[in-house]
Length: 196
Image (cartoon, rainbow, N blue to C red; front, side):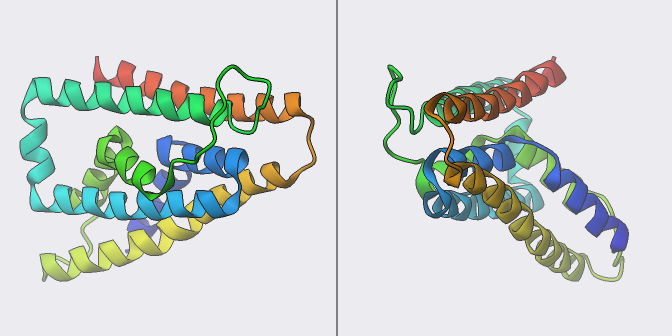
């Protein structure tokens, strides 16, 4: 079980669309809007985990063109989110993002986030520690994943919110938000290379 908990920690703490967008939303819009976004991510990641555990995700991903459609939707949504984060709070930009993504944005991201499916598949199909009962093992895994998931995302939220509160110049704020947005796009590019 300790090996599983360590794997959960390291797979969740590493930059992916969820944590990077959490920091980006907090940096661009502040802690409270980002918290609502994290609520959406939380609901979404648990729905993805249920889809993985129930086998629904495996059945869906057996259809090759559907996998490509989901990846394209994920890339498009992450690009949209990256632009929204990059230009949040920047009054001189030609794009000015007024509204943070909210619960629906977090839920939408997890629904099409390739890392969410890959990580949950690794969590729930690997690391067996209670062979006597798959049900008990699955329930314990859900509890452990969520017990680690919540603080990890709150740390990323706090990092972004700290940047938001700093009295930075308009250009510095834009540069930080753009860097976070580009980091999200780099994750999308890496996922795209992994699919080929």
